[in-house]
Image (cartoon, rainbow, N blue to C red; front, side, top):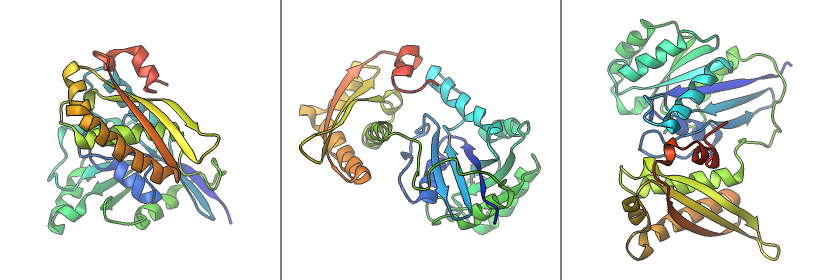
Length: 297
C-alpha cells in the first residue's frame, strides 16, 4: 500500500488555539500555551507517523500587525509557510459571529497560495450549534476552501475527523523524519520556551511581550542523572526586572520552580535550574538580540 506524507501549516490570528491544537494532535506538549496573544514566536514542527502516513504539522506565530522587528519576523515566517506546505489549516474562533479584520487580512493572503486550504473553526464547545452555520456561510462567501471542519482543539482528543480530511489530500511521499521523532525542536530550545511560558502565566500583561529567554548552558552531569540548565531572562525595563525578580526573589523562585518541574516532566530526568534576569532596552528591535534568541533564520 502507498505511503502518504506531507507538511501542514497551522495559521490564524494570535490566540486562536494553534498551539493547543498542535499539542492535542501529538498528545505531547510541543508548543507553549497561554491566554496572552503572540505566545508563539517561531515555527514549531510536530511529527505524526503512522503505518501508512507521516504528517508534519507546523505551528506558526499569530498573524498580526507588527510593532517591532520581532513582530516583523513572526509575521514573515508565518506567511512564508503558506506556499511551502501541502495543506494550510486556517484556524478561526467560533465565538466570532463573522470574520474580523485580522481574519479578513489572512484570507487575502490565502487567496494567493497554491496549497490546499482548510477552514478549521475552533472552540465550538463555547457556542450554541445554531451559530455555526451562519459563520461557515460568511467564510464560504470569502473564498473556496478545500474543507470546512469544526473542532474543539482543547477538548477533542486526537482530532480524528481533521486527520481524515488531511489524509484525503496528502500526496504519496517518503518518511521525512524518523518514526520515533515527535518534534524538530532541540531540548535546549524547548526548555527556554517552557521558562517563557511560566513567565507568561505569572506576570502582568505589560511584561511578557518584552521577555526573551536564552539557555546559555545545558549539560548533564557526569556522575549523576541530573541536567544543569542556566538561562538568562531578558526584559526591556528596570521596572520589569523588579517584577520578574519579585520581593526577596520570590517571583524568580516561582518561575524557576514551575519551569523546573515542567522540564523534568518533559526530559524524564532531574534538573538543576539557575535563572538570571537582565535588562536589554528595546531588544525586540535589536538584530543582534533577535539572533541570540533564535528569532532569525
